[in-house]
Image 1 (tube, helix red, strand yellow):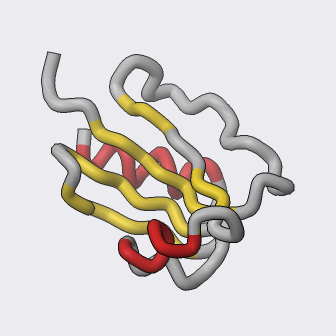
Image 2 (image 1 turned 60 degrees about the horizontal axis):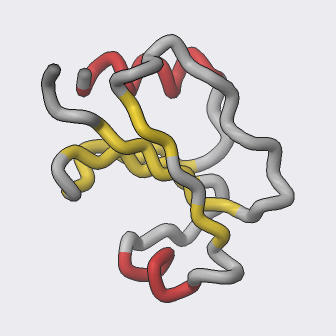
Length: 81
């Protein structure tokens, strides 16, 4: 199996959790509460909520800022898988 891509959405925990995408088994999704972890959010430059970082081997390869439709997220993930 190839490298696993991590998609890390930054936001507040009161937001709805990310819905399952068709990339099961290829993507790990994590969530960070920026109110509880401001240093980590700052380290990654997450200035807007929501911010979705797509990482490969610990390095950012793509970023989505703002609310976007599911198809837009899938398009970004398909481009890096």
